[in-house]
Length: 317
Image 1 (tube, rainbow, N blue to C red):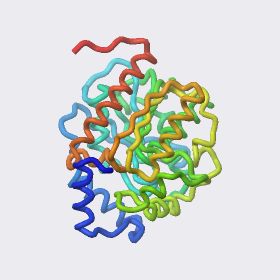
Image 2: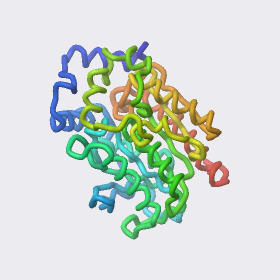
Image 3: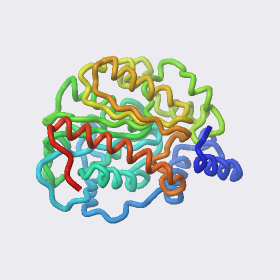
Image 4: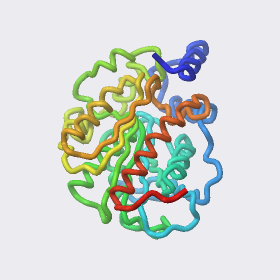
């Protein structure tokens, strides 16, 4: 059952009788997400650094955004964040507010990556951009203005998938600095077979079965390759993980399966599930207040994971 504030949101959306994403063009869906974020999420707010970036990749350049609650930094970890949106929607505008909160919750700089979107740039464009962006941050570019001695990878939804795939790529061919941890929020991890949650939550939630198919039809991933379905790959040796799922989500079971597979592979893993919550909740912090508690718990676990990886003690309050 949805929690109370989620139920109120779902009732509002049902009464509004909004068209499903599967009836829209990609441009319409992108504009719709930007509009909904303005209504439902929190703004960037006060933050010391908000700097546009130009990130080189093997296919040209993509945009990025540096967000940091501190104007100056000693060398330390830098978070590379991949936004959600089904590989079709989402950008620096839709996820800037959340990425700023990630920076504040972790007290770390965050680089938000504006990878290429389908259908104009189908799979594996996003995968390649995600890896290249992480390697660029690890290389210590002058444009960043702070030196990374380690990476923390993170993402929500499609960005959660890119987080996992990038962690696997950097395990196999390391970047200039190590990946010390990764966090993935309601990721899609296995396109090769159905999961029970896909049928259980096919209707009546923000992300539906029809919507899921619309995203994947545009993305056109190879469902049997680890870059499209990372759960099919070897997870041994991945950096410590935090996995956060939504209890009322068609892809909930893929996140659960990923966390279980990490544990089986010997990867230190913290698993949380936002019971009664729906997909895309990181963009609902304004209208679903309980979201903030779920995120605070997950990011506290991530902070502890990073500290343990660095062999440092918690900072005194």
